[in-house]
Length: 198
Image (cartoon, rainbow, N blue to C red; front, side):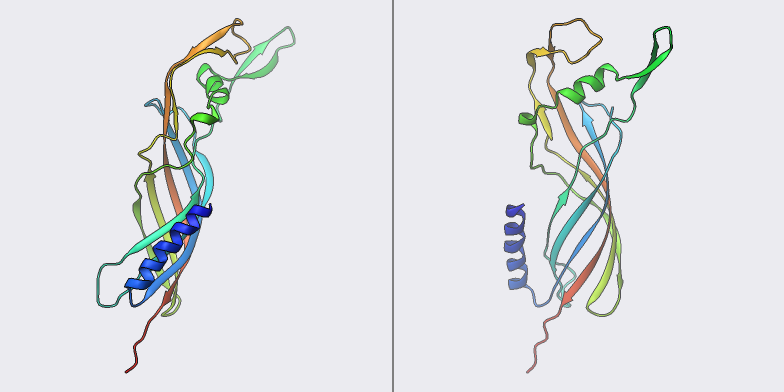
């Protein structure tokens, strides 16, 4: 988190130094995340949140602007679809996760999880001005990652976590996952106007 603020400070310094006027603000909101595991979507949406700080140049003489932002985004996926089974003379019902879910629950090994990822952001939004210096933002973005969130090579002699399978060790194939998130953001944009007086 410290590196995020250091990076935002240097970007902000560059923008303030190059532009006559600047805009800055904060935004945040809802995140819906998916993960592609081994070229398949077998997970449910993960519903979480995000927060972003941003800064940009705001010259009245140019249609282009320098822009920098950094934020906290929770990404991933969820499992919400256990199967049920009936057993015993009393007809006891219990949940039985399927084979893919069992290994997903026990074997995302922390050492193969990448903390920082990269990708692109595509989207759009609208700004509703309160007055000349303050506005409200509403944005929707789609954010696919290019880097692997999880990158695990093939593993041998792993303890089988399936309580219904015969005892013994198993082998796990190579497993990789990438993130895709959809974000709905609400925020405030403040304009810092520089006026030169002769």
